Length: 603
Ligand code: UD2
Ligand code: MN
Image 1 (tube, rainbow, N blue to C red):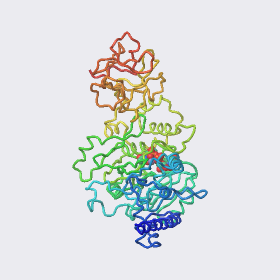
Image 2: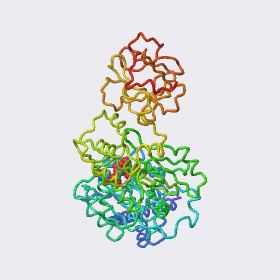
Image 3: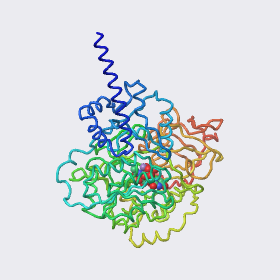
Image 4: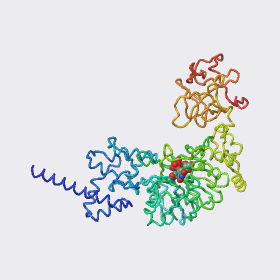
């Protein structure tokens, strides 16, 4: 008994000494911060293979919960980055970390020390995603293979595919996430297909993106760093990248992506077959909190679309598309709208004048590229065999331009050039206040020169699902009584299933812009007023049946509800919507629908 316990304590001491020595070496070595495998290798050399391996295994972290069964302070410290030098933002990881491998989530424990908690919070504040967790994960982490089986068959693609310049623009991106993006490109693409990776620094001020970034890549000839001389915004930064590119194909990625196995070949193959095809990978979701890699098989793929606010949105592949491609050897979806990650033939890019649109900072350029591609003789495709993960953030972490409504300016420029007579639907949504949008004559000339088709052609042929306000019986505000109060709600996904609001009428469109459809819906984009006995809420439109059917009578001004036969009203204190027994004597039940045109109604 005595001998045994003494042996055990000896063993414990040994473990403590070895691991202390090991962490010291690890941190020293890690200031090079190249990669986890390289480090494991050097450790194996210095400690002898067996010990190193055992150590790595003993300390392996549960990828689901890295701190599980881990109450010793000693161990928790191991996950702290080493002390920072002045001007050094590197956050270094315990090299033995298995955190996040195979795209597994990394869940931080709830009992973090105050010091760690502050680091986690800072990471969120700076980046709008969990930078601390990203820093724990290898920049070479493994990922699941999200491809359908048929994608992996040999000889699927042309033998001599064109190579591509991969362009990654960033403004104040986190260190580990940027490196992981680049490594995922280099690690998972055939080298011959990568001409170069161009990192376009859009005037970042974080110190790790300066000399430290140059040093990190100095032995990797394929990685080039291009610096903007002032803050250009994503769109001009992408153009700057293109000007430095020498490959025949350009591939654009965000600076917080991860490419999966075989992501590149199917994209290049489509372009090799037709240089006017602009191709997008399936964009998988990397969780902003745990960095888990989420993916689905190709049947669950979403495609891009937009609404009359000229905002990009995602929707399911329409049925017409599904049936069209069911029997094809290479089923690709034709989206109405490209996501921000795509490949394009460089000559075609130049011919289209891509990104030369005078857009500022962020936004609008996906719509422009998509309209232009479709209307000017190209094709847009989502290639289901190509998967790239992206961290979707809930807010924008960086500074925008102050004093200018950048998004509106970009969108007005877009509408002026590409939307023809449909531009008015966007303007109605912004209260017809176009602001100063600069000169668009050059862009109109380009459109003429390229002999592009009309926006009506685009809507009829590429996006027939889009609800066109001109088909509505009424559009604008839905005002109660003497136009004191208007229906007022945002229609974001998070607003669904919530009561529809009321607000003094303001004539600026926005959340007070509604459409009354031929089939009796009161809707904005894909959101409909819906009543099922409780409150009047917003609900995704499902085709004007029962709960979403409203019958407006222009004479009585009543809005009578389909399945309940009650009428829409506001309560006495004018704070909320209520449903009441119909009575046209009551002002609170009387409504005015802006631009109501009875002749458009279906009898
Ligand atoms: C979506 C698109 C993105 C782009 C954007 C704007 C996807 C997955 N992403 O991005 O590709 O089309 O919408 O429409 O579809 N950046 C700069 N300078 C700036 C601002 C941003 O270089 O002034 C970089 C930023 O570091 C990032 C990229 O631009 O790499 C896109 O910005 P984001 O990630 O903040 O926007 P996100 O994901 O909504
Ligand atoms: Mn992004």
